[in-house]
Length: 217
Image 1 (cartoon, helix red, strand yellow):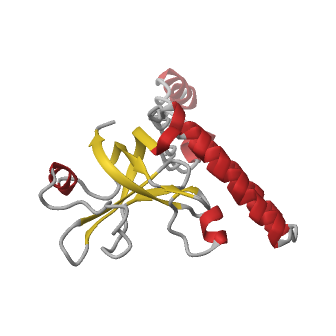
Image 2: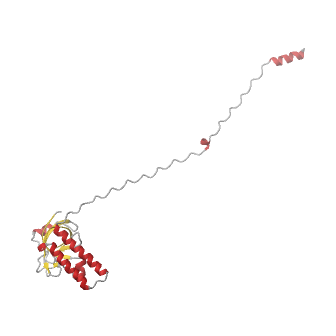
Image 3: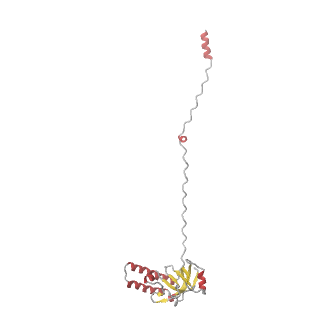
């Protein structure tokens, strides 16, 4: 009887509460496990295209100047070709005579009127007169003599009493302008040219001009 009572009592007691199982840990994702990537560097900015240079239109040359320059350029090229090909002095000298006829036909009476030029040099001689030289677009110079002895017959040096002296005194080398004047006649080159040799005259001519005026482009 006692055994049965104990067994019944044991069966009638409530079972102990179940212990809760610990929650499973959250799985580690690949994204979380991966190290943080460094931020990408900014791409170098694309440089802006450079603006096209502004082309300045060259001032128009008078017809006489254009013909003069054409004659000089043609003769220079033919002379250089003749030298490279071994042409003799007779043939080279003939080119000088051909150029003489061409420049005389281009500049009637040697009158230069409003020719386009750039100031090459501004100086004075021992007497204080202006020595003035300009360059044409075709690599030819027009200018006064640089000494009184050479200028005796041409009278190209510009005295300080001349309004032209004051006008050019305000300018500087590299200034573009228009020039007027008179080329002196000469047998060999048609107009007086100051080079000491035929080669100098044909490849780098320097004509003597008595200036009568200058003006802006």
